[in-house]
Length: 222
Image 1 (cartoon, rainbow, N blue to C red):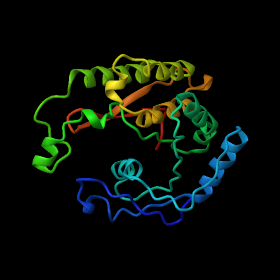
Image 2 (cartoon, rainbow, N blue to C red; image 1 turned 135 degrees about the vertical axis):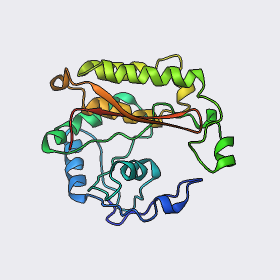
Image 3 (cartoon, helix red, strand yellow; image 1 turned 30 degrees about the vertical axis):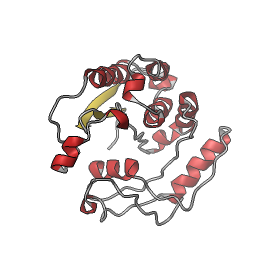
Image 4 (cartoon, rainbow, N blue to C red; image 1 turned 135 degrees about the horizontal axis):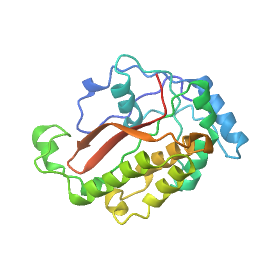
């Protein structure tokens, strides 16, 4: 709820790639989110000192390179409970019917401890790869795609939660924070009314060799 948020710097990325992108916080929609969450029993408040981190604005730069759309950012809960974050998504699901685009920004495979950092340092490019991704990363990435493209409605919510018991989950996610976005999305797009609407893999990048950013779309937006 900061009307003039700053941007956190991005390590090893030249500021020219993001510094001039004008952020557009949507305070009115922020108030609407607070009301919806409070009505659903969450203890929630706005943060008027919050600066945007790269996990949020870099996604917007790629999706909307000409201009940042009016945007409200919702913080994760630090206990990283998938059921909690599904409830957050479910509480905000009605916004989709009002024309809002809900975005969960995380990562299919995001383990900083198992990335390969040398090519980035050598070439000053986080997408540089001298070797293919490791098998454990490819295996979990495929599991994520299978779950999102093969489940809908409440089945999607259950399948996303089960991924945290996948034998490769801890290889793919040393910490749970970057997976909670998937739980949020499953909550927002996994009701009975969403049965038959499946996720589609629209884009994907690999960086630091073993980190996979998969972009899925559930439903339609324009």
